[in-house]
Length: 198
Length: 198
DNA sequence: GCCTATTCTGAACGAATGTTCAAAACCCTG
DNA sequence: CAGGGTTTTGAACATTCGTTCAGAATAGGC
Image 1 (tube, rainbow over the protein chains, first blue to last red):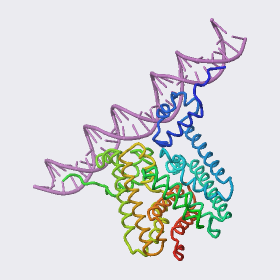
Image 2: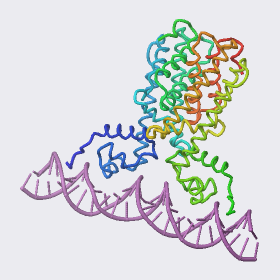
Image 3: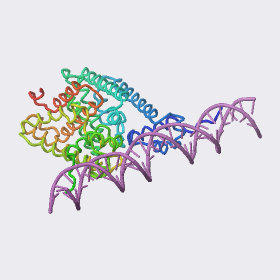
């Protein structure tokens, strides 16, 4: 009963997220969202509420995806933990189109003045830190990393490098350079010879 | 001749930069700038032109400062190059008040749509990369880093870690964790024993 | 085929934003 | 002290933005 929806909700949210990620929260107008989604402004409001509500939903779902990705990265055989770290370091999300991470961008733009955003960002980053720490521990048990090293510090180093590579990528630094940096990061972590190449 | 200015231009630009850095370009209104500088909107316009011009001036001066800081970091004795790297890694600008780097923030917010900003950002990052590479080379000549390592990759790793630490800092991760990460980064780079502590 | 329920559209409104401008305030010079 | 040139101010303007709403459009149920 009633007129059915003409759009796919997931597709709309993807387009909205992409736009917020490219132009930021304050830099994105509702008219921009209307254009990239193909929906009129009225439809957007009736389906998703106001701009703020829509953004928080997209951001929340992105953070959930980040949490799940972190958990998935920990799953797997211990002797491949180092390879999973390397894979994450050399293929950050958005690597191909330079769009970057919505979490990092939103934190920089909004966490300063919005406590809810700040709290969610911190939780997401701590999940990332914990997953990286676990990966380092796995690699240590597998004998790929010096067992005397501090896994929390090394895991944090991997995360910091990942975020930094995204920032460099967004600035326009060429990907070849970025890959060499990522390799150097893994080489610096894996003190055991034989596990530093590609 | 004529009424003299009541404000100090440098102080105004500092306040403007701080505001842009906290709330971003689109998140900062001219009225915000009027409030933090103490100048009326009309005075801002007659003294510095429109919002766009004012921002570009502040950004340009910030990039120049970044360039000069990079050059200054290269000056100094070679056997202290590693310490200068460590100092830079453990005390990024804005570390104390979580304000972060205007260059990184502006790149994330505006480089996507503004070619001039993108070009200036890229130039600044390449200067940073080059200065880090030179520092690593100095430390290698001083015997503090494995001479067989790629100085460009290690220098890039330092820069990426620096940017990543800023992102983590802005998310609210505690500074103790950040310092441990920074230490791990230097430890990973400095293969020579005796140079990994504080 | 009509009724009803829901969605879609685009015009409209108030608030906020970037910008301009004329008048007042001010200090230096003569 | 008077004149002139510069700055300061705050009101005013045009534009943009977020938001709302009444009516048109569209599907299924009787």
